[in-house]
Length: 435
Ligand code: UGA
Image (cartoon, rainbow, N blue to C red; front, side, top):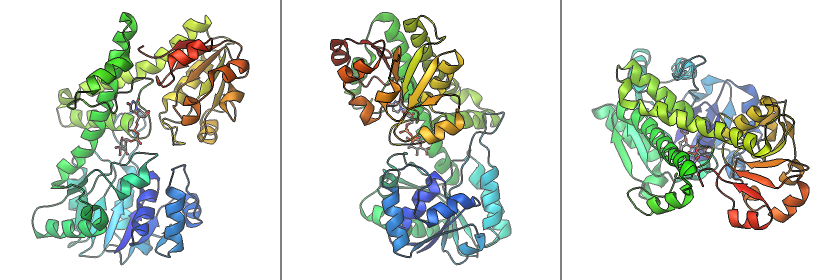
C-alpha cells in the first residue's frame, strides 16, 4: 500500500520505518527539517533499540522516504497522523496545536476515497470534531482513529507485533471500508492473530488514555504501599511479589520506586483529568490527581533520604546513576531521574550524573549538573550514590569495585533493583524505597 505518515517524532518515525519494512511504500512528512534530514540519511534522531536497523533496511529497499513537503502525500491510500500532543503550557490539558496544523496541511492534498488515520493521543471528542472537518474539506475521505500502545525501548517490536489493534471508525459502509484498509496495512499482525477491536471514535480515543491511566494507577498504587511499608518496616517488593501471584492483579507494573515519567503517562493522566472536568465529570477521574501526587511525592522522598543520610545537602557529593525516564531510552521528558538530580543540586549538593544514553539530552536541559561517562567515574569521592534509572550496567555494578571509588559507601536504590544483601555484605549502607 502507499502510506503517508505525518509527524516523524517518536511514534511517527518508528511507524513509518516499520510499515516500509513490512513492504508498504511510505513517505514520512514533518515540518522539522533537521529530523527529516537525519532520517533521510538513516540516522534515528533519538535512541531506540532496533530502529536504526529497520530504518536502514527500509531506506535501502527504496520504499521509505522523508520530506518536509506535504504535497508528497498525494496518492497515498492511507495517511497516518502521528504528531505529538504535549501538555499545554500553563494547564493540564493536551495541546492540540500540532494535530490541528497537521490536519490543515494534510487536507490540502487528500483525495476522496482516501483514509486518514489518527494515531496521536487526543482528548476524547477530538476525532469527532476532526471527522467533521474532513467531511467539510474533502467529502468522500474517511477518518479512522487507531491509537498506539508502543513502549519506548520496545517501539519497533510493539509496532510490528502489537498486543492489540484498535480501530475507531464511523458507522456504515465508509467505516467498513476503513476497517478493510487498516486490516491491509496491518496484514502481518492480523494474520498472526492479533486481536482487533473495531469501535467508534470516542471508545478508541478513550482506550488509549484509559490504558495509560490504568498503568499509572498501578504504579502509584504500589508506591502508596511503599509509603506505608516505610513507616511499618514492611518490604514493598515482597508485598508486590505476593499480591502479583494473584493473576487478577499480576506482577507487571508493580515495581515501586521513584515512579513514572516520560512523554506519555504523566501528561496523559493530566490531560484526561482536564478533559473530564471540561465534560463536567471531573469527579469520575479525580483519583488520577492523587495518582499524580503520589508519583511526585516519591521524587521528593529520594531527596529527603539523601538529606537524612548525608546530614544535609550543602556540599554533599552525590553520584546520580541514570537520567532517562527509564532504561533503553535517551528520553528525559518528565524524567524522575533528571528531576531528582536537579532538586539535589538546587539544595546545594554537588551532583555528578551519568546515563548510558541520555547525557547529551540532560546536558542541554540541565547544564548546571556535572556529567560523567560512567558510573565508576560519577562515583569518584561520592558521599552518596543514588541509582534512579535501572540500566543493566547499573544493576550489575560490582559493589566492591564501586566501593573503592566512593568516599562513603551509602547507596539509595530508587528502583529497588539491587540486591540489598550483596551490597550490605560489601560494606554499603543500603536504602531501597519502601523496603
Ligand atoms: C507508556 C505505555 O506503557 C505505552 O503502552 C504507551 O503506548 C506509551 O506510554 C504512550 O502513551 O505512548 P512508555 O512511556 O514508553 O510507555 O513507558 P513505560 O514502559 O510505560 O514506563 C513509564 C514509566 O513508568 C517509566 O518511568 C518507568 O520507569 C515507570 N514504571 C514502570 C515504574 O515506576 N514501575 C513499574 O512497575 C513500571
